[in-house]
Amino acid sequence: MLLHQGTKRTYIHNVKLASLLGFTAGFVNAAGFLGFAVLTTNVTGHAALFAERIAFQDWATARVVALWMLLFLAGAFTSSLLVSRIGRNQQYSYVIPVGTEIAILLAVALLGHRYNGSLAGKELFAGSLLFAMGIQNALVSLVSGSVVRTTHLTGTFTDLGIELAQLLQKTRNDHPLLRSRIKLRLAIIFFFMCGALGGAYIFRSLGFHAFLAPVAVLLYTLVYDVLRIKLKRYYYQWQNKGGNR
Image (cartoon, rainbow, N blue to C red; front, side):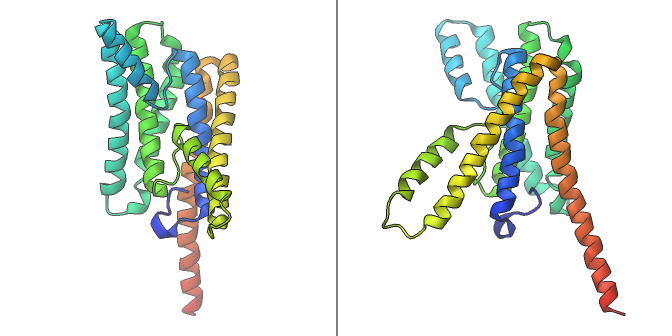
């Protein structure tokens, strides 16, 4: 899911990535909103809120909202920098960004009960989640070649509307490609919504411990790819040894 990039990626890789990380983003968005009354997977609404707070001269809140937007940007910047430059072995370049996201969500799950509703607490916890979602959005976009975006649905619904209209044009000869793209958009929307519903229900039952669910999903994603790399390596080594006998 995360290992293959460029021409090595297939439609199935993107569907798996969209399903698991779309679910994660939807879960974090719903649980984060219930926990901190802040949307934590995109910055669109924060731009409007920032403008409103400036208009009402609420400088303290405006500063916090500006910080949240910068943290999302910082997460995306950090993820991109790590993927493009880390180490000599590029096949593991996604491990640190995903590991960072896991650490942030785990910290929120274990320490979220200390949130007391203060502006400082909201600034810290919501800002941490925005940073984590910035990491995820940039990572998924880079790995998939900007085909998959998992932390918001605005662009996905726009692309879906365009592709549905194109599918109705009988003169086009790329209908199979359009159908595969439409299925991918629908998968992102479906699993984001499933994650949001799961986040809302589980948060009502478990409180901040609900954030352990997306941690588990990310761990599965990480372990799945790392194990596949190692298993393939052992398989090729075994094949080479067999061929040299």
